[in-house]
Length: 374
Image 1 (cartoon, rainbow, N blue to C red):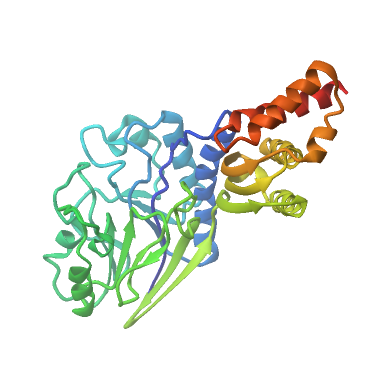
Image 2 (cartoon, rainbow, N blue to C red; image 1 turned 120 degrees about the vertical axis):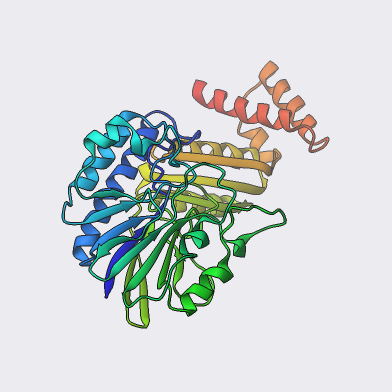
């Protein structure tokens, strides 16, 4: 029997353009912290080892500090061996991070780089079949090729690979795509018993055997990912397999759409944002639509401004939100003379068509300025 953790796509050193200042530092640290979480989980689950299926680092040119901190985090659980597979982000080319003086000098004893094509014994009777990337454009199905010369075995074989399965292929052909049918044939023939894959950041089971999986990324990286932030605890025996996911991620990417037509909708949005935890590790994208008064539009702006600082990121798309002054809006300005004339002229412009969004924005700004003066 073999019991291990399957993970991938750590992409240590990743930056996100929408993260500013201290938020980026928190994001970077979380990707180091999750290594410690994985090591502790491996101990708790009595796993013999961890396989990291490619893209351990964001690139071969990550900062020296990232490499050192990552290796130190792995070294904190010396009884758990971490097998690192080079992927398309960190291939075994001439500039490989795995061959750098920093990596070689700081590598703890429990780190093994799967840089060859020969089977690697991970435990008695358990072999890893590695399929490392040696360039960013291998022009071949590396995973199936790694299995081509395998014969019958009495032990357990785990393929450790990286890349997109042809199961997800679109219209164009990519020679590096991994052929799902070939892997399933090898499983049915008993040549391999589990295929651990990386590259897809969402946890995904592929095919019909129950033995081909993407673990997904242990920390989310984008809104489009489905169920990221997991690792897989895999148990393999004679003729059986059990795969359980474990949530390890600290960050969240959340998207939502809100139709706002009255104050109750604004209350609901305020409550939803207030309930998010932990705010400092939550990235939010909201699309707002509907039709509101200028007073409600101003309230929406204040509401979003209040929530912006606690959250890591708050992105707003409000191009589908229309605002127009009502009688109460004009009355509540409480001005006279030239200021009243400006309010009346801007109000008239907003009533002439949707193209006068500038007039509506000016009215909202004027309301805020008057409020500050009063």
